Image (cartoon, rainbow, N blue to C red; front, side):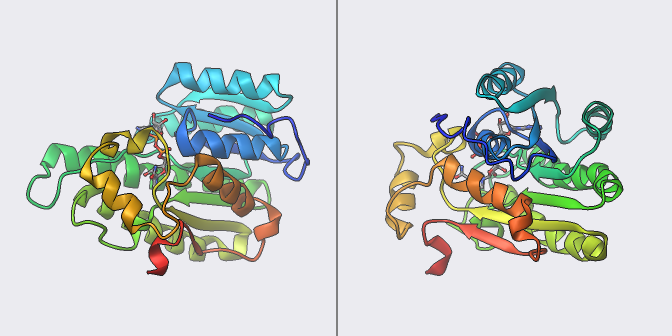
Length: 259
Ligand SMILES: NC(=O)c1ccc[n+]([C@@H]2O[C@H](COP(=O)([O-])OP(=O)(O)OC[C@H]3O[C@@H](n4cnc5c(N)ncnc54)[C@H](O)[C@@H]3O)[C@@H](O)[C@H]2O)c1
């Protein structure tokens, strides 16, 4: 992954503390980099401890403030521990990026109960648990920003597969709007970002298959997006530059949903 830009701090988020879930690699890592480059103190969380520790060390080497914590987003006790520790050590919490997620392919008939429950626990319940754990701390800090990572597949039916993934991402889209209204008067903004097809490990499972050809053929810009192209928009939504945005759904998809 490209690391350029990490040392170019513009300090816009210098007084902010951020938690990023699924931050060890892919889009979450790019979001952590973008937030850290803007001056935020970033707590990278994931279940991939080695990769997460490595990224935090890399960001610190680049002059940024970053640490790593193990956090399985489907575990409510994990959330309480990480949020409590963050506030105790860094003095507060202002930004939450609910990015952790998994992707699976089964359709309506091939999905199993076990596969469904696992995906929903991470992609959907994990986002709710994150908002539940963080919101009181954002309120205590005088306001803040939550960015939930949905997908183009949270708004449209895609190729007719991945039923649990679509269900979870649709739920993230609507939980975002619900929470945005719940907190609109308390200075806590909640927005969702909807990436198109981004070149991360998640997309590896379709590389070299007809699905990859279908993805490229159906993307107006004719290429995959990069994690950095999502990370920058997440940092924007987290910042005061987006101070009048809440309940919004932001598509970053090479034109996919414009069709
Ligand atoms: N890559 C794409 O094309 C694409 C498109 C739209 C949306 N998204 C969404 O972006 C987010 C990031 O995906 P990515 O493409 O970077 O994939 P990725 O697989 O590279 O990253 C996902 C991260 O989430 C972590 N994770 C998985 N289960 C977890 C759990 N229970 N608790 C905490 N962390 C967990 C993984 O370890 C990994 O680091 C996901 O929510 C995904 O659905 C991705």
